[in-house]
Length: 66
Image (tube, one colour):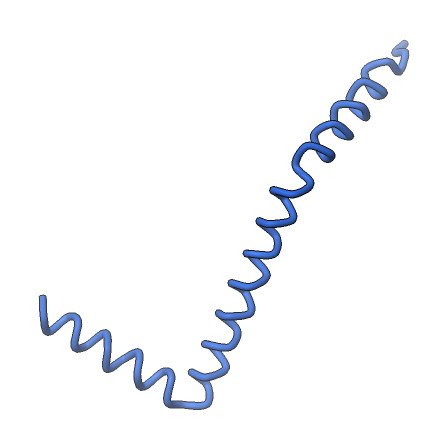
């Protein structure tokens, strides 16, 4: 088990120390930040979006069919 942790740590260090790895880490941080902002927006506007979806659904349901 301990050797697995050491291998993971060494792999992580080699990824972070290289420029390619640094780009990967920056990308991961950016994706995480976008995810957090998206979750915050979804939580903030949850009620408004639900109400609008219900309103539009009722409008579609009231369209007469042939």
